[in-house]
Image (cartoon, rainbow over all chains, first blue to last red; front, top):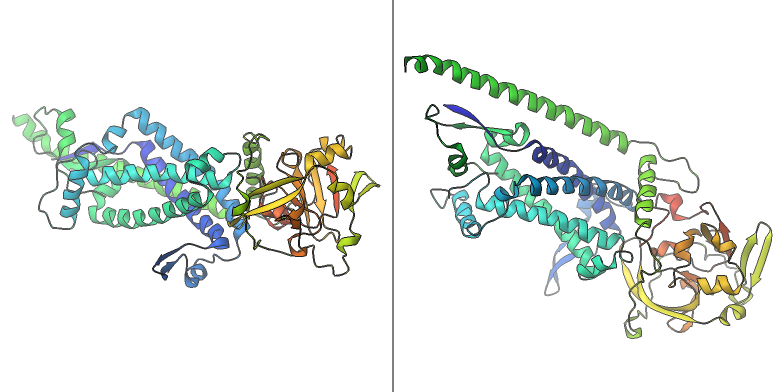
Length: 239
Length: 262
C-alpha cells in the first residue's frame, strides 16, 4: 500500500533551490575576481601539480579581464547568499529540524558503513531517520562551509573595519586561501551530491521539489505508531 | 472486514491521484519559479550600463547595489579602526609598481613640483615640499592591498592628511563630503570620502623605505590611504580639491566601486 510521507518542509526546499543558482553566480563572479591574482597552486617538491587555473579553463568560461564586473556581481549576490543562508539557519534551528540533520554520536561510525554500502562492499545500510549518517555529516559540513564562506569573504572584503574577523581567519592571506578552498569544496560536494541524487532515483528527487516521498506500508489499516516507526524505516535511497 | 476489502482499491486510487496532483502542482510551481529566476538573471545580465558620469562602466542595477553596499558598510566604518602595522624589517625592498597612468608626462620635473590646493573655485593655495616637510613626519609599515587581490608590506613616510588640513587652515574645506586628488597632467584622479581622508593613518607620503619616493612609485608626493584599495592611493599628487559631490575617479569610471573601502 502506497503512503505519502512528508519529507522536506517548504522552507528547506525553497532555500535549497534559491541557494543553488545564487551559489553558482557567486562561484562564477568569484572566478572573475580570482583571475586578477591567480596565484594558487598545488605544488609538491617544486613540482606544480595543479595551477588554479589553466588557460583553457579561463577561456572556456570567458573569465579574463572582467574583475570589475565580477566584483559588482559578487557584492550584490553576497546579500542573497547570506540572507538565504540566514533564513535556512533560523528555520533549521527554530523548527527543530536540526535534530534530524546534525551528526550524533553514532554518525561517524555509521557513515563508514554507508560509504561501504554505497560502494557495494556491504550488503545492508544502517538504519536511518530522514538522513543517513553520511548525509548528516555531509549536509552539516556544507552549512558550516557556507558560514565559513560568509566569514572569510567579509574578512577579505573589509579587512580593516572587520579586522577581528580577518584575525579570526588567520590573517588576510589565509582568509583568501580559505575562501578559495571552500569554493573548491562546494564544487566537489556538488559532484558527489549530483551523483548520489541520480543514484537515489525519482522518489528521492521528487521530495526536494514536492516535499513528500511515497513509501510502501503493508499494514496501513492497523493503527501503527508513526511517531516512532517513521524514523526507523530502513531506507536504501539517499542523495 | 468485507467493507475494508471493498474500500482498498478506491483508497489506493485516491492516494495515487493525490500523489499525481501534488507532484504536478509542485513541479509546475518549480518550473514557473525557475523561469522567473532565469528571467530575472537575464534581465540583470543584459541590463543597460549606467549613464556615464562620475561613475561609469557598470550595469545600472549593479552600480546601485555597489552604492547600497557602501552605505551599509559605512555603518561599521570608524577612524578608530586602525590598519595592522608591521616591524620595519618586514617591509618589502622591491616595492611593487602596478601602473603609470598620470606619470607619463616627460616634461615633469620633480624639483619644480608644487602642490596645489583649491581652497575655493579659482582660489589656489600653492605649497612647496619644504613647507610639507616641516610638519611632523608619520611613518607607517602596513600591508598595501591591491584591488586585484595581492598585497605587500610597504614602508611609507610623510605627513598625516589630518595634520596637513589643520596646518594649512583647510578645516572649513575639509568639512565637505569628499576630497579629490589628481596628477599634474590630470590623467589620473581619485575621489575619497571625508572620513577616510581624515583617518589617522592616511598620509601624504614623500618617503618610501626612508628615502625620497622613486618616480615610478609616485615621486615627489603621493597619497597613502590604508583604508582604501591601492587604486585610490594616487601617485604624484598635483592638485587637491574639496567638494560635497563625488569628484571624478579614474577606476570608478571603469566599472569599479567608487568607495573601494577596506
